[in-house]
Length: 184
Image (cartoon, rainbow, N blue to C red; front, side, top):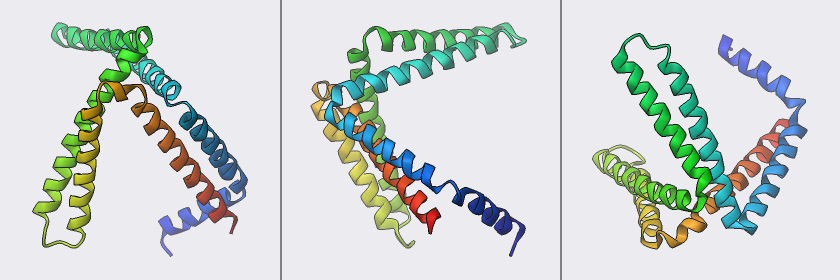
């Protein structure tokens, strides 16, 4: 066995004793996912607040970084970038419903763009095995983006919350599966 294989086996062995924590975290994430499904609008607002905090943090880091830059041009670039991030973060807190509409539209655009790109890449790799799955994933992603865009801005009250709820549930099941696999 290789050195990497030994390290992986050792890490799995140390983690095996903690299998219950993985299952507990998975159950907790499932509960949070169920709560998010129960009220998608509150879950949407919560996700907007998380994005707002991340933008504020990113803006503060960029502003601090600006003062460590040696040239004026780069200083102003980093300062302006940080200020824009911070303003966007405050905007998310000041009007979370409008911010959710903007984020939902950006999500729709990103899904359409990445879906089209994924389908195009898959189509260009036709002779290779599995190319059809890549095309199918791209088409489904692009269609999801179009469905979101067609329902915008009304669906911006629940789309982000739905994505959060689905993610929490899948993460929960994933942690439970890992915990139970470690137990064996």
